[in-house]
Amino acid sequence: MIRKIYLDHSATTPVHPEVFEAMIPFYKERFGNASSIHLFGREAKVALDESREKVAGFLNTDPLEIYFTSGGTESDNLAIKGTAFANRNKGKHIITSSIEHHAILESCKFLQKEGFEVNYLQVDKYGLVNPDELRKQIRKDTILISIMHANNEMGTIEPVEELSRIARETGIYFHTDAVQSIGKIQIDVQKLGVDLLSLSGHKFYGPKGVGVLYIRRGVRLTPLSHGGHHEKARRAGTENIPGIVGLAKAIEIAQRDMEKEESRIRLLSDRFFDKVMQRIPDVFMNGHPERRVPNILNLSFKGVEGESIILNLDLKGIAVASGSACTSGSLEPSHVLSAMGVPPDLAQSSIRFSFGRSNTEEDVDYVAEVLPEIISKLRKMSPIYEQSKS
Amino acid sequence: MPYSTKVMEHFQNPRNVGEIENPDGVGEIGNPVCGDIMKLYIRVKDNRVVDAKFKTFGCGAAIATSSMITELVKNKTLEEALKISRQTVAEALDGLPANKMHCSNLAADALHKAIEDYKNKKKKPESVSKRDE
Image (cartoon, rainbow over the protein chains, first blue to last red):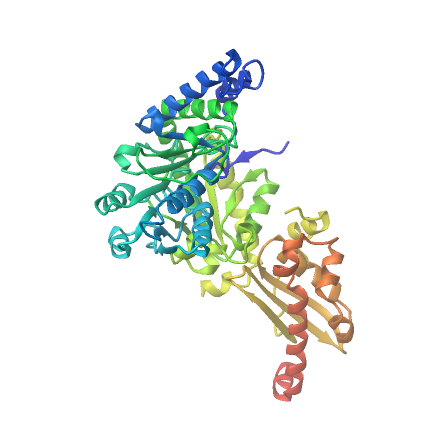
């Protein structure tokens, strides 16, 4: 029997059993539409309100500032395009970073076609945005700054508090994409000092198809979907009650278990890293060595292309991701690693291991056991490995 | 990206991996930005490709096409070898995923380059005689 080891938790996670349990009634007997005034509707409304309170509690804010969406991508789109459109009379300039998720980057590119101007901040070799650089790029007509909390490819945590302070001093809205940090590190919107923040349910053992956008009171935002008065008329569409209940339950569990789980995952990741470094030469870590969410470990295996590693690991029942061109779906390797100055061949050689609840010490030991053989087999086949060795 | 059984078979057990010492022709293609680098070595005797070996940095398709072409080309005359196209290689592997047809199907190009290299070397008698010594 083939072992199955899932090390791709940054792509998605399984729904936690408690989350699933919490959702079931809202597909069955409590299926009501939260806008209806009868009993069925009221039941749904109560669940919606309670979920909103849980999310607000976790983020340390008011339930009135929590908006449910269909996921991280919609939250990012609404944050970027919604504030841009609502504030175009104040200015047309937006600042973001070059390592954002495509939901941010593509929203910005769309806005550029609509006449907005966007600056993409460079990052250092660890993937960190420089606050001084942000300060320099701010213009009189800057209306929005969007910098992610933790990067999805290599886990580096951005100095959001420092960056948002700069935005606040200059009266510019600040958004952060916290899709990869939720459940891994604390997210307190007051401490972070952000005006908008995106979350997605399925990255922390909640269901797919549901997300959150936190919008601080007073932020002007144009809705992207029009219809009923759901979500205070900022996001029309019947609320996905089972999903919302699931997301809230996932948040509750994240809050309850975060400390314990965080240190467990950190130990697993460190254990794996140490073994790999001992057993395989020419391996480089991408991302910040400490300032990083503990569940993501991104390594480049010199001389070997990422997809060929993924396929070999897959044959052993191990699931990982890569920043290689083949797997990014474009003709170029990861825009994140490229922005960090990682040379193209090493970006092509990158593998993202993202650990999670299901992983044990035995799992990571097994991966560390099969990996050296795979890398050495592929290196023997590589026309660039020997060259780089000399 | 579902690969055919044949692609996976060649990927897992690639044929003719390595280099040929003093090869009669070498074809190198690709660059690290696009993700695939392929180096194909050929030995030519009496106008026939008698041996071929490869080294490839690349994805599953890149490795499988490299392996396949070393099998396809063996004992072919140079004229026959030049007729091997990207399409020939893909078909011999029972097809490649659409997104791989363009970016990772470079083996035929590497082969054509290797043959070109052989022909160029032949034009310069000093390098040929050196090898023959």
